[in-house]
Image (cartoon, rainbow over all chains, first blue to last red; front, side):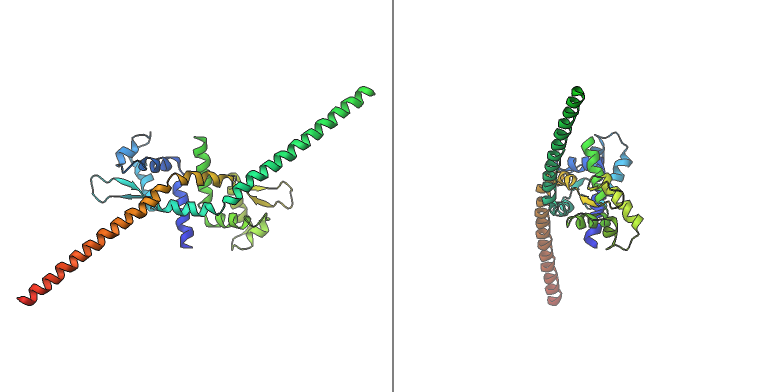
Length: 127
Length: 127
């Protein structure tokens, strides 16, 4: 159950575009809260709140220095996400196959319907 | 922003162990709500609520028949998750390298500390 819980925490932390943008910024190297807040039109405290969520999910680590606490990316939990997702690879490949089959069927039905309409139109004319 | 929103919806839907267990069950084929509820100690309505979340996130599709509405997996959104995660692969590989460096440093410090202690013990004996 522990692994499931840590996965839930990771997924919940990732379910926000600002938090994902923060992680993307940190791929370029460590940054302070001020630096991380700069591209967003949200307050420093709002950024701090996002950072706490990311920190609890162990997606970032923060230096202990009181004044300048740079954040750095910790992508470890994303490895778990990738491994979890990999189990479904054959199904998303399949889902595209299924879509192809479905679209094929749809097209066949449309052709059939169009054929019938033409037929009806002809029989109306003949009457 | 649309892609980001759909990713947020997907991540939020995945942030629950019951919902992930439902997806895992559906890898074995379509199932009804009753079948999906069976392994869980939660009510039918609670399962239905989870199914609505998964349906909104397009992770499952439900047949339209009113009485027997089997659910089936739609792994399409998981492809997006996999693609998003892949961008961080080099960082989780790096984070293990960093851990190695850190553990190496820690070991060196311990050895150094152990050496000093031995030295202190010796000088105490000599006194």
